[in-house]
Length: 116
Image (tube, rainbow, N blue to C red; front, side, top):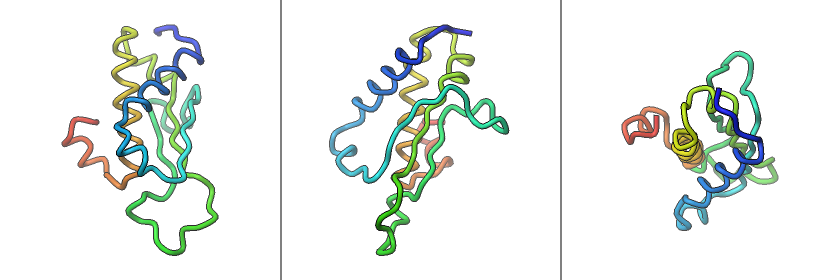
């Protein structure tokens, strides 16, 4: 497994977030991004997870709720990548993938766009 500290991986996630165009990040609402070492035991290869209510499904009832949560998992990303460059690329794809879920874009559409 490729070695990378938590801090190094968190920095890659931050860089990936910074690469999201400002016109999109301005539209993001009530969402927080976290880095964790491992995903839930029932899905050990999960790279990222979006939990919340997509912007496209929010209505008048949406007020006073906890932020949506995007979690990027370090362990499976490092296990599947053979180089730092691969980790950088995979982290960017995963961050974009999970943010797309925040915007209401489903997995089928993401796969069609190349964000598997």
